[in-house]
Image (cartoon, rainbow, N blue to C red; front, side):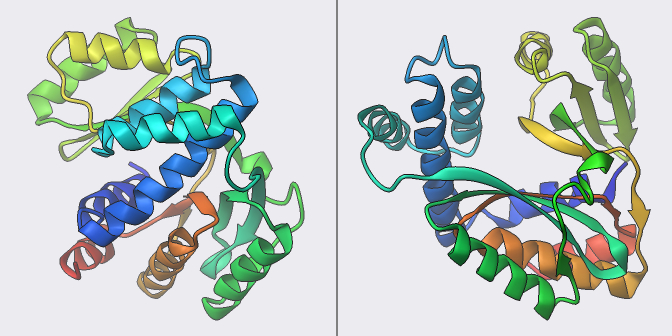
Length: 250
């Protein structure tokens, strides 16, 4: 199981404070507005909007906030944002991909570069790490060993490309187009899904040392704290003991 996915799960658990939720809701509202401007406000006709609205609901974002973000995007209100992807390197040569929503590229790239340099990372050229990532739908959930095997069979029947199971943690990989169908199939069979979203999944991972893992985890946290950064992906495979310590740190 990729250590990055475990990090995302721990990050989600640690993001339950009011301050963290507020920052997440702000980022989700911006993403909703951008997706609406690009594909329209009709949830049934806008595939990306359906996914981000579902993500907002999974994050317990109030319905009023979601509706306001849709209206703001449909009305062309607020700052004009564009989606920009940056490719970077972290400690130990870890590959990073960042998705940002920005109204000022110069500001955004300056903040990203400064954050990377402080952690021993660097900003890369276009294409330097993108070759190692592919877009996939990723569904995550918790299940004991017996239940995990059942979930894997259900997911494969629903058209999943792959299922990975590790110590009660399950990841289901799909094409982007099949993500919603696979999620619904699991939930219709009583499976509680923790998250389902489009992601950039690394083709190959890098196992990092304990020291590099700690540095990389701090870097990922710092990048996610940046207002303009909406998503952070890496190919780091973190040692379990470092993730356990990271989780205990609160």
